[in-house]
Image (cartoon, rainbow, N blue to C red; front, side, top):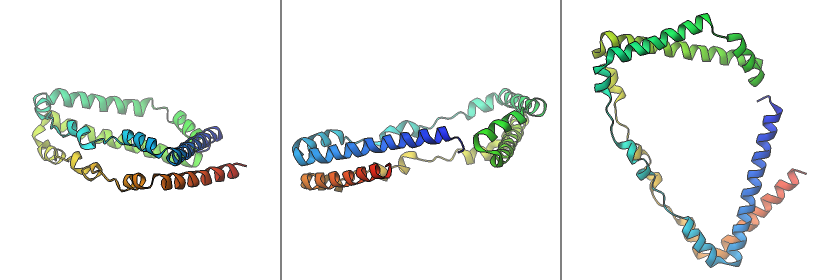
Length: 203
């Protein structure tokens, strides 16, 4: 990234976020030291369990669209082919490659601009060629897409993937409940040490 203003802004934002988090940690540690019962009550209210599996339940409902595409395969295929033809007409007749290349060079530097431009063009051309082939098959012989459809329609359970992430682990919470003042002291000392280190590093 060669834009100094953007780099400076990102560093300033990261510094502010870091200071805010450290201040919150110091405040939490201090509250645990002074009023542990109140701090534990607040932590208990904030520790509401969120079920990722329940949130992802709508994604588990199969939605079939094959009938629509097979019923209107010529219309869908024709629209896709029209889009591919429009892309190639624009690409070969009116694609502002020089302008895009200049803007890329201004953003990422000249050495990478050409590589990014070639990669982008190759990706777009390749994708449109593939879409054109599939659209042609869809128009004239949609039955040939059955093996592709069977492979693409393999069901992947997102809820099963997140099953272990949905389990409740509370060893740290139990430690804080048993030793609130010790935890507060450790959090306060650690966050204060890091905070002072930040200040020294920044001069």
